[in-house]
Length: 66
Picture 1 (cartoon, helix red, strand yellow):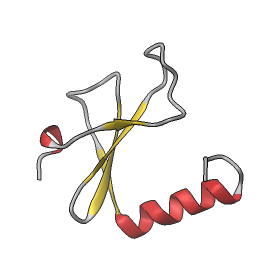
Picture 2 (spheres, rainbow, N blue to C red):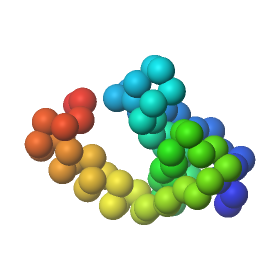
Picture 3 (cartoon, rainbow, N blue to C red):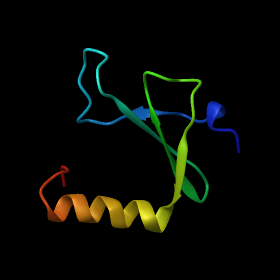
Picture 4 (tube, helix red, strand yellow):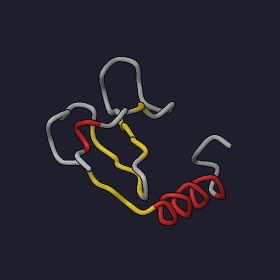
């Protein structure tokens, strides 16, 4: 699947002034992540289990919203 054809969402923690923004997109069996300053640049994709573990780790450290 081409990541240019998916619906990207900005992180709720991203600043509104175009600064350090992270975007994510749901794929059938993965989550894609990219830097919103480089829309045509590379995107990283990780499996759903890895993404869930990453978010759980952030939440356990109070680094992400519940």
